[in-house]
Image (cartoon, rainbow, N blue to C red; front, side, top):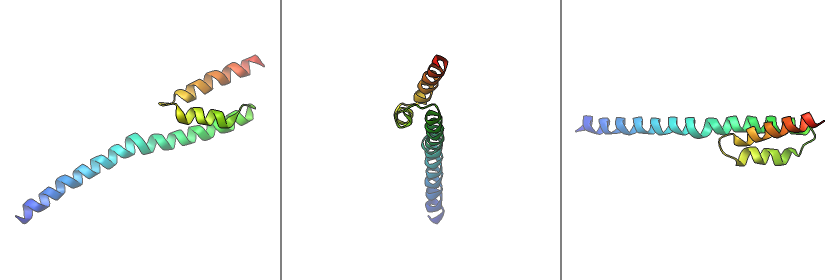
Length: 82
């Protein structure tokens, strides 16, 4: 009976480890990467005299780094016009 109880906890601990691993992989790491990308966009937009706050919001709001791609296209277009 005691061994069955411990085996049940072992299954749950494996499940908790899997949930923590998935949380880390799909939420925490992309959030950290997006934070560093947003800091880079803010500094780059400030150096190019663009509205940095708006571009950081675009990067944060759009999913799957689409905002970064839009920023890079717009940034290249604005620098080629000068």
